[in-house]
Length: 299
Image (tube, rainbow, N blue to C red; front, side):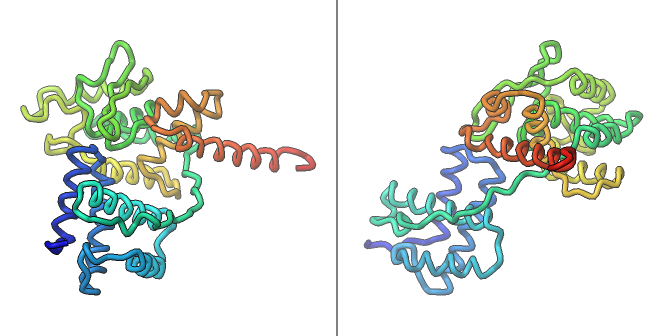
């Protein structure tokens, strides 16, 4: 190849491509960028350019990663980022040959997601005070996450017009900008209406349409929601590693436990593949076995 490739340059181009053409989520973009910058640092240490990278070089990089005690899921993501990056480079003729074509995916065990019991969730949701604006907002956050099962990134992106308060439906923009409609329960609707009524007249013009606001009147972020949930988890002395995604997992598991079919749950969660949703069947099977072992006289 006549021109040596700059890894940094093509990583930036690739991340822009994922953002503008493939509509990857901000979280995935951050992860892929981190993974590829780590690979760029490996290239720099070995005085390698992208045009000279071989399959053996990639194997050396992965061996180095395995020595850093990453979790299997993180290693799998880093391999996926590499494979996707080199596929992109060859597809658009930035590279003549793909050195990652034979790179094996890292086999990892699916970790069963953490969930909360129904009584734990009810206690959590009822913890925020209803006599302050921020308390009403926080209760609306918890009610909405558990009522709809939407991702935290989808929650913070909602505008008021995305909520059908009479029909009890939410229009959600999911991953890759795929739109779906989710039902939302009466308690969540009531919590949102109470919050919006309290904040009426206190909103900056540029944030008037945002559903959830921070204390400065801007759009709430997913990290802020995570901090809010951890605050109330601490208040109820629940010693669990709870995140916004825990409410999504709990939503799906509780539906499945009460007879909802897997295809419906897949649609509600916005999963492209049913195999992604099937982890909840493993979780409910595990829970059934635990109940059996506790309750059966000869279990």
